[in-house]
Image (tube, rainbow, N blue to C red; front, side):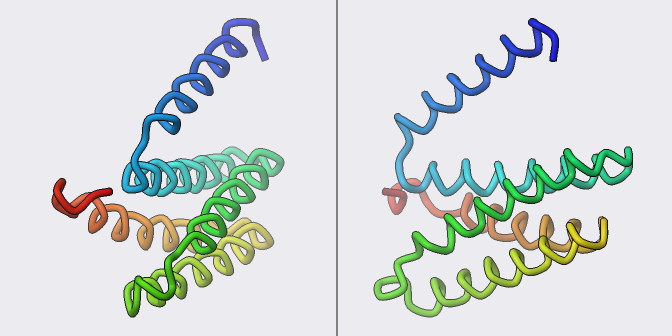
Length: 131
């Protein structure tokens, strides 16, 4: 990594930390969904380039985010929606593991599409209902 890349990485990390520190729970979920999707897209690009190490790191990061999202679901207050999201996050995690083992961009694209649907619906929540 060049010095410029290191500085850019530090700047990005500080910017993200600032975003997280000031974020509402709604915004945090938005950032997590976006982060998982970015990692999945990075994994797809890494497979296309033959960069297996970077692919594994990206998939592991996406998996960790999905697990974090799953663990923070309000199963009591969230009802059917929380149970549905839990199922999707578990399924997505399983597909990520399979994609990692098989270097399969199709499974990664599938999970990215699921998260895109959730992200799109999440963004439609009216401002007055966001905590």
